[in-house]
Length: 341
Image (cartoon, rainbow, N blue to C red):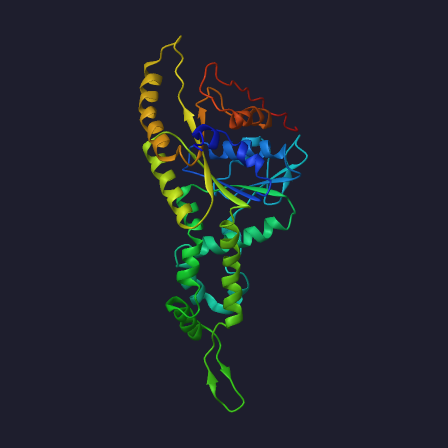
């Protein structure tokens, strides 16, 4: 039987509510597309349907504190007025990159491993997953760094295959370099054995990343939400991200197209009409590329900034609306909270 496309992939994020097995949701996209607003609103939405939700910012330029108008740290902090929603901002570059291996390998080997593309992101992210999992939340949403940084993280499987095979070329180099920087062992008969990284330590190192790979590729528990705007560079980065996700067996089925201009016919604005005409070209490309396999949520360019829990709560309703481009548009009013004197 022919399934109607609109029924199979309705243009909302209701599917994220319905899939109760989800434990990890990653929200990513080019800088400046409204990724933090979308991830913060999604966190509020899912907090209505889950016992405990944690929103984690891994973007070096943290902005969820600005989005909620509340200061967050590197520890889970309850969002004011939402008892089961917590947020934290993580500085990944402050995490210990190579875990239990680092004390053994010395500065030279540490620099060698650090120069391998993607390995730093792989290890810091594996440590982050260990950290946030211990807090016991039943759903964790990641507001990720801009696309370029995120793509390195998404390439974990190829990093694992190409770098962490202790019997392969890079693994041999690691052991060779370690023999130069580690203290040799002198046996009882006077034989000198060059120092090397033990197989156990190397396997521990590899297993840390393998755990991340397994988690990321589990479609029952993990999915990725792409946020873009209808412009060339954003569409290009979205396609690059989706291709990378597909190559690494990471689930992605939701795209948020943000900041769509909706001209008001009663107040003609030539600039608005011109911009929407340009956007229509890319909206058409998005439909051609993704409408058969993705939920595409279309959000308008608003005349107000979305900031504070009340504003985000109004914005989140659009994530479940199939047509957000009708006038009058949502108008949100940000009221700054009273600061203690």
